Image (tube, rainbow, N blue to C red; front, top):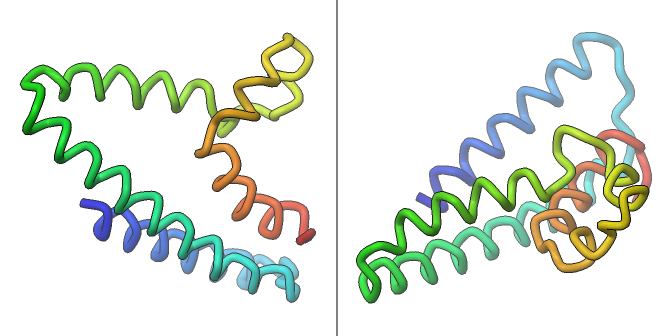
Length: 116
């Protein structure tokens, strides 16, 4: 499953690149920093899938806990809202201890802001 999700991520990034080129957007050298970030995403996905596989075989009801945990992690990760919103509400610790946020910023920063 980790490899399938990684392939979907790569296809999505390729499509976003094509749309950016077609609509006249600029692609700069900072976009190359996405390649190591994709490697980090792949390693994180394989590790998470392996941990999930072990826990699912040891604990029967872990699937249900995992579903709720992944949904909570989605809402705790600033994907649909800016990270400053969490800081303003005193929840900056969610940014600090959330590994998905840091991996997301490795890809979001070069694509959206053009920074490294």
